[in-house]
Length: 137
Image (cartoon, rainbow, N blue to C red; front, side, top):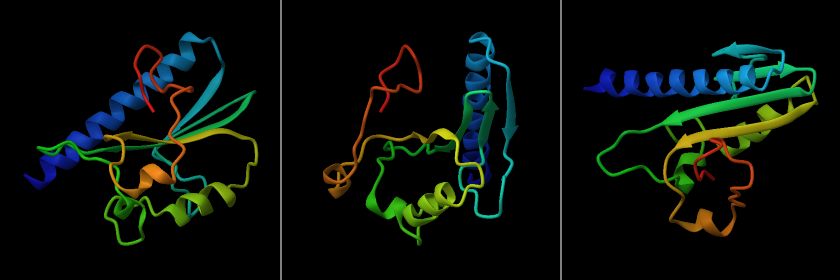
């Protein structure tokens, strides 16, 4: 069962990556796409990088298919987490990026909103939707 879950996550990542590429192609924006490629050693947003004449866009994609849908928790953002989303490492990845023209950097989580104390400190926005016709935050 262990590898099945991992493969399911890769399938989700592949589908979401294809979606992002198609959106950029349909917008007729000449872009270069880098998939699963670190731009530097501590790059934590390496699932998809999009470069074009406007700037740089980076995506990190996480998926979890548990019997009870996963909600983002404070523990997910700690160094001890297995999902590799330590908040300090995410910040350092953004801060150390050699190209300072990053227009949009985001985590794409197929998870529910937090239900713990993260609700009090995160600014969860839905004004820049990941999917045009679906409510995302």
